[in-house]
Length: 511
Image: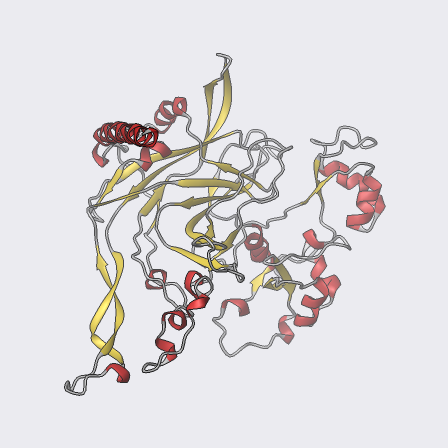
């Protein structure tokens, strides 16, 4: 009896929650912004708004053939030998090589330059604190052109002899896939925007700052509504024409960004549903949950910026879009340890303890007393060697277990020559990690051109170009802005004391 009463009680609670949820959803839908009530009404100067076209490719609609772990490993007990059909036709055998297919859609993304604005931010104490807010005004449009895999019944590519019907002169055929272009009435954009400061190794997630919206509209002289990240997520992006579509306008905001940030990238997820995955559960066993060990990566847009930084010029507040054309001379960052002194640091990293004064001059804004270093402080180290910015170089992507010596043997270059142009590897006990970009000097007079000179890993860059590419984590200067990156990862804020052991890894996508 108690069980029946409890069941009825739980059912009533569920029904009440369901009705309440429906009412809330209906209210939210009724209040959804549309393309007509958001966006600047005034025309913009030519060149102010940069546009990135939707990135949809046939290859993103299908994953590479691989084992379907849930069947290949989790149902290994289904292994059997049929009597009248080949074993390759069994479920377990077919699960060893499976292609996953799914539709791909994409949104057009247009943006104004990344900018800064001082805004009074209310605190929990009731007081107002004036902070520098970083922001970017952007527009998204849905232009259709989706890719949908479908059967192509006009192109048979194999015959199943074992299932052929003797009475039918046309045996059964398998069907190839094709990709059709389709469109929907609307799509949603759920923005996930991370601003990364490369040298400081800090990342900042887009934040909701309501009091900043009006100030931004006033500063940008914009009319209409600017949607924040939450409002944008609930807004339908309607199908529009390329020439006349107005799109939906939004703004991304960040606060407490380190003023020392000078080389930055903005990573944007949500503009497409393209993804890829890898299975790491080699020991996937029967009864394991679906998707165990499966790592997903989403297609991400990378937009690069640079600025002098407040530690160089306190009056500079302009942020430039793109990558700098001048020589990038990144200093090496080092965290002071207990017991360190400048002479020891100069001897370890510069092989000359007399250069301790040079380290002090490079960090006058951080080191107040050269005789007393504060542990935990991050200082900048000058370069060890001088070199020509026009020196030719390769970009080598480090494999697992490779050392500077191994890389030197691979390219027939001395280890000291590699360390001379890789200042982040100049410590005698420092080696590159897997996936790290290492610059390898080239003697053009001895360079042997390969058969296919267009291959990316055979391209030769000047040291000036290579340093910029290395700083932004790019494998090619003229490569795509699109890449694949992890779904999750810890995001560091403004504090130097935060532990950042598992920052999201952004790996450039192979063109």
